[in-house]
Image (cartoon, rainbow, N blue to C red; front, side, top):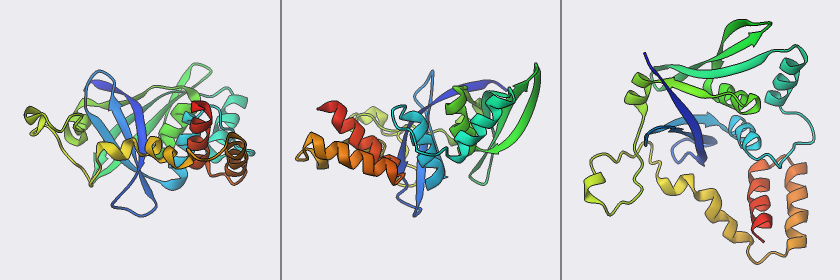
Length: 204
């Protein structure tokens, strides 16, 4: 079975499950997206790893694992999403120490949070992408895209980009106030808000 490389497209709030988020993985050499429902903590951990400029005051669980692995010369080489059963994705961490490779079972959300911290590639098998991959419409006005466009769990393109549009709520806030809000958000470990504030400050 051939492996397909994925990258992270974004995270959106799930409209169907309270407190859950949809992690959107994108096929590197294609147009299919792989949505995976994950918990709030894992979504926050992945968001922090994506936002390089935001550092939590204390290490999160995935940061602790990375520090532990670094101390004992363990490297996560890659992550493979290898199975899909009843809507649940199963993943493996391919680790290496002293040139000996080990395969460790992991939840997909944890595996991806660690892959980001180790800068390890993420893969899945072609048959999983064929089964669970979706096409999100880029231009709904094109009739020829209608048949290929699939909505899963009411997830639409606008949700993926919601974080950007929500920044408009800060347009009347001064730069000084934005910096104060950013400090408060980081101290409160509200990294999703911190990311939005950071983007607004950068835009100014």
